[in-house]
Image (cartoon, rainbow, N blue to C red):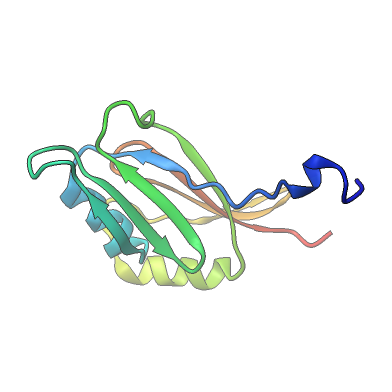
Length: 130
């Protein structure tokens, strides 16, 4: 494309998945306690209304929402990463009572799939070198 092309000004940033949650304490236990994320921000329109929260870790940003219209429970997020085996050792060391994920070998690489307390699946994948 030439620099005169109006599409040359378009540049996408990484998307931010929104995952539906139903229980703030369980979401914090899973995302912060088990997976090692930190809270980026929290928002409620009023104290007794649903939570909308950002969690971040090493360049990955996820939004977690209690709002019924924001996302569908049972979604999946594919997360490419480096250091899958180190991440696996970290997760195993935490002895989280609801998940003990293993590394799976796939044609395109290796991954760890974890399911949050709300049915959402996170697929952390180290892609095979081609």
